[in-house]
Length: 590
Image (cartoon, rainbow, N blue to C red; front, side):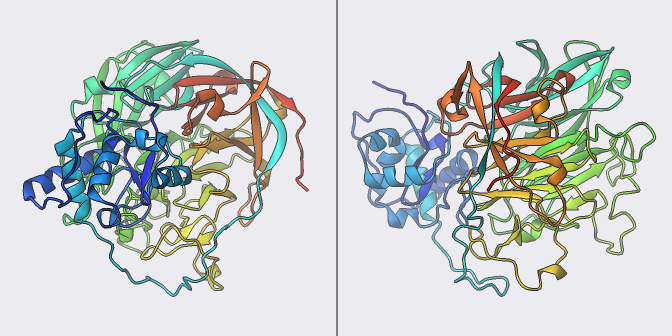
């Protein structure tokens, strides 16, 4: 008799196993893997395919990623134990297996379970894991590896004194059979015919119009793009969307999504000796009637890029909402691209360069045609147009990002452009957008040095000659004592909650903690003070982990009608509106 348990992330001997390996069933037949791990080529090929489909988004065999790296696990762990652990890990946790409990407490990250792996599948995966054993690598530069910073930012985040009063305004429809059931990811508002319309999308392939508390399907990309995939999960699928500033007249909007490797020739590719896990695709959609409640019209592909891994893809596309007709930035589309896991996979040269697509902020004219493929334009005021470096990619506006999660502009104040970047092991960062800037990855993580050829999970103090490196550093940051992955937000400029005016509100994806910084304190060369916000639901002080009943909250933010602030959580698919605040703001922490 099968029994299904609460989804849990399970670890063994330093190894986090993907949720797809957590086959939630009992083992009445006492199935066991043979002590001798097979070397059969067919089984190895099967294991590699299963690993790439289900596990590669979280793990590799070189560096710790979302979960620990997997090289050498079959030598550290008995194959029979490993087999039973994969088949029924939650039961081993419940029974108090010391290794499982200890490592589960160390790495707390939600992973959805799958029930598609039989005993042969598990044996094949173990066989494939066995082919990867640890290898020594030399450091790429002169770094004293004995001076690892165990706690890069020892100062703790102080409380702001404020709690956001939030009210639930909607529940996203389920688009999956297993948690997370609704992978809602981005919310924005546009105006058509004088009316504000809110849209929110699910990574599993649906863009909704949010009408009061109803999610109305606006575009189902699965029906329009037969090659669409949302595997291996996390940030893959329908990545982002943006409406052209003249949508009310032209009916044009844009999306990004993922497709299998080799679906079509890539506009941005690398050496064919390096594996391609998937492709990210940017598309333009033109509606027959911009006021229609459901998409009907045509679409075309603008560009396509290969990715080494299934992580750190195209996190955001956006137009500058402050740009008016006639401004150079009007109608220019920004696209934030992660490194695709290239550094983790051992290919740091693929990213961190103005000569490459990956790990950059791209800026294009989607209505133009002077690109190499002729399907979009390259703005002539991009920083590397007519560059002295003939190899510079003219689409690049800024570079040196690991995983740029969100872009936003302060609608008041001095109209800062803010970029949040999800870090590796130590630092979550907020940057000011600067044309032509190098933000340092994979030689820097936040305002700290790392070694891309060594253990990139170690942070080091900046070298004495760092001023010669011309890196642009964060204007605010926090380390992994406080959270795991930054969720980019917005500067509040609404009227409903004046106490929040001028505060950039953001949070942590995993823990669900809410933070804020004063927008006027975000300056290059300085570190603004990050403070924590609480939340209240129905008059009770609580947390998003408590509200969602989940250790991985998957926190997101959006701006709705009349510039009001929304918070939503992929863990339970709920959308919340900030309606008030409680408490008194502490202006300075002492």
